[in-house]
Length: 124
Image (cartoon, rainbow, N blue to C red; front, side, top):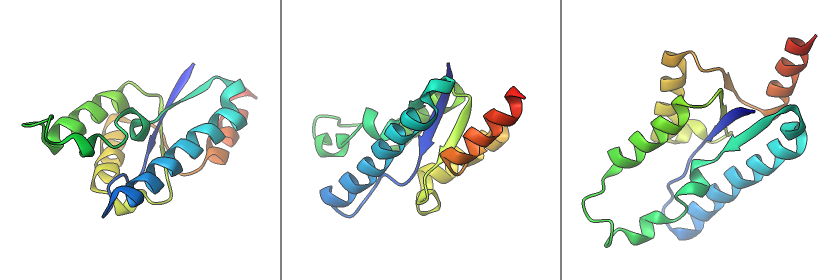
């Protein structure tokens, strides 16, 4: 099973903007499963893992941005590839995740179709 880390913008000006970004990541994960899950690809979707945790800031006192970045970095480093959503460059976190992937030699994709094409070429 190959793990594909999905990265894109999470933060927003309000709950609804964040929810839109979470849905985009979730929908991409579902499409990945639908289109290439049978090839052995599994989505890792941090948006879903910590969905709306910012709403619990009061009980997560002392947990800063670096905590979330470090946890996400650990997940990314265990993955076989990075899939960037179309809004990735609007996100400081996703931009850092792309830099980490580049530094670690983790393949980066901008669409599910790219992954499928590369997989098809590797199987021939």
